[in-house]
Image (tube, rainbow, N blue to C red; front, side, top):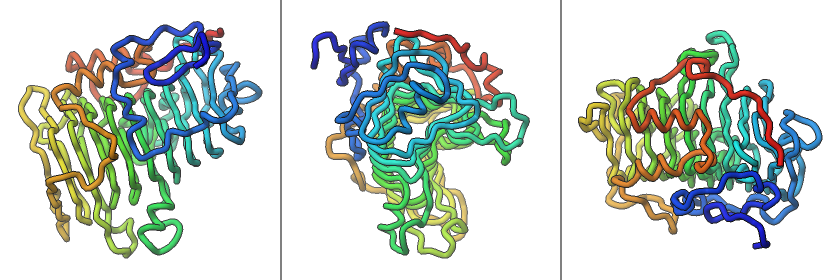
Length: 418
């Protein structure tokens, strides 16, 4: 490490970009480093050249878009801070070996609005970004359907310490084609997203009755059919009606030490939809759900269980040390299997069917305090939106929303430069 570099958690921030940055707290620096403990490679672009973002313009020389669209291993750092307005033209990352170090921006960091980020490559690490797409005044069901951060047919991707809100589709997802690459299960798994880690993020306020053509669409995280080696750890989910982790058919995933607040109609959810499998043999899903906490809020249905299983296809399930309560403190049922024909079989296991070898779960009793301290972009430098979400979780307030304008709307497009 060079003299003058700043250590953030267990990572080093370039001194030039960090000169105007608030110092991380000692408490945050001791947080579990879930990002390094999943199956995804943390290589990113650490061995490549450094590209500096020098403008908040949506594109052009010195822009974030230009940096991520460049080829070759690269680490993106920021000489500016503020709002990048994508103007409904989302970022698409198609070149591999990329690390985006949002912690290098001066205060208050980087926020993207009116668009999202789609990762369509491998060996990509995103850290300390805020992505708040919003409905941008679009009419109900008008077809403005935007994810916050999504992985499409990607592998070895880490999304860590980001704050994602106000998507009109999923806030955060790992997706891809169901049956790409051939006729074998192994080909399907290689042909969609795999080796993905979502860690220490705030995933909040998916917009409900907004501009998605289907109507209601407040969704947290979707893990699509046949995705494997997925770790979801240390995240806060708040005010999403559904998909406070939806695992589709034949997913293999571990969900550990997440805090889910105010889920509406679904908290944890597994579903294989037979028509989507087009006559192919249904494969068994594998889930390890450990040390998660669910707390009901104003949007939560009075009969909501911790986990719903529906559709067809069997599930191997290991569930341990999870806590789920309604707003008043009463315990939620742990599992509900919705009636279908044939009825999916949930096999309860005594040990996890998959588990990253270095991962150690915190006890559920310590999860809420840990997540509220550590999750989200730049915990040492919270912005107003994240601060409000955290207060609502602590106080048991807030609800699912339809429009970002209900909670103050987009941040002003201020600018800071080192």
